[in-house]
Image (cartoon, rainbow, N blue to C red; front, side, top):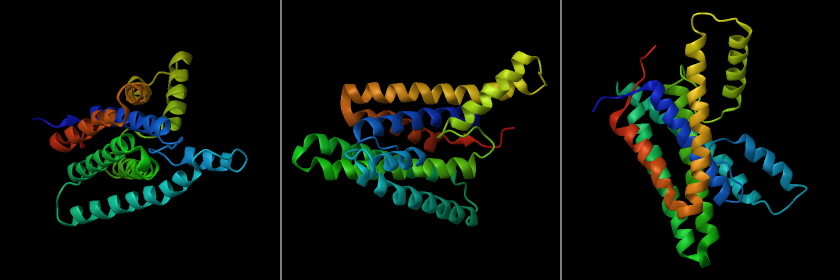
Length: 225
């Protein structure tokens, strides 16, 4: 099998981030697994409006940080061995997403231990998305960021504004395309994550597990212009 285009892979990972982040938010007391900014906001809100599951958000932060650090160390170790890091890191992320799903499904099946298992699910999810954040910054740094969309939307609106104003240089269309598709896929992934969780619960995580596993198997062409 041929490796995916790097841009297609980054777009697919944006869908994974939207799916996992929204599913985690809906299922786990408002937890954001793909980025920590939202959790900081919700922790602050907990000070005046208790009952938002602040403990899980506080635990998720060090887990996210540890996942980023471990991802970095693993990538450096592979680099020293002269081995490409993307596939192994995607494989580890897929395993963490699978653990996220397994703990979540167990929390649904064993209601008496539901909260500890749900907490475990959230921490596996935060670890998985910490790895995606780190691997994207290290190995796909030239591509559109695929986990947090605020900067992408801002830049997309600026580029589109230039297009409307007639300031159209040779690379403008390509820049708009590279921004538009990850933003769109993140949004669609978010909708799919909410609807899929509503339909089948944590088992819906099989979709992002399959997507990340696919990238781990076929790889990405990271040397594209």
